[in-house]
Length: 253
Image (cartoon, rainbow, N blue to C red; front, side, top):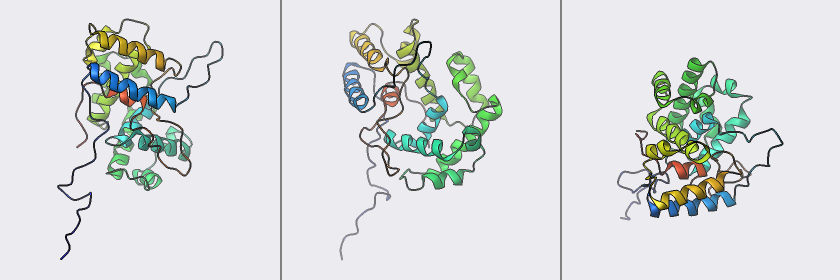
C-alpha cells in the first residue's frame, strides 16, 4: 500500500520560515538588514521631489495596521496586495469601516492568507473602535502623543490585537529614529540599540541616507503586479525590515 503524503496543513509538517522573525540588533544583523534594504529599495523608486513649500506624505498608520494584520507571518507582498484591493474596492475609509468582514474576505479570498476571515474580523473590529474613539479612521495623532498617551489609547481600543499594537509602537520608534532632527538616544534605547556601538551608528547613518528621498518608511516591496498577484520579489518591506530589529511583542495566537 503506498504511503500517504502529508499535506502542508497536517500536524508534524514544518512550517515555512517566518520572514518576520525578530533579529537581535547587532553588527551581523545590521549588515544583513542593510543588504536587504538596499535590494528592496532598488525596486521601489522614490517619489518625485515635492514642489517648493510642500513635504512628502508621511506614513499612514492605518495602512500600517492593515499591513500588519494581513501580512503577519507572510511576505509583505500579501499585505501590499490586500491594502491595494481595499483602497481600490472602497470609496474611502468610512465606507470600508461599515463593511462586513465577510465582504472583505470575498475581496481577498484568492490570496492564500491563513485565517483570512479571522484577520478580516479583527480589522473590522479594530477600525470600528478607532473610529468610535477618534471620530475618524486616522492614527496620525500617535506621532505627537507621548508613550503613556499611546498606551492609554490602545487600552481604549482593545480590539487592536497585541501584535499590531507592538508593530505600530515599534514603527513609531523606528520612524523617529530615522527621520527626527532631534536627539534619538531614547528611541535607540527603546529598540535595544547600543548607541555607543560603532556598527549601530554606521548602520543608522546609512539607513537615514537611503530613506531620506522617501520621507517615510515604505510598506511596499516594489510595484504592484498585474493580475491581482502579490509581489513576492522581496520578503519584507523597508518598514518591516527595520521593525524586525525592534523588541518582539506578543504574537497573534
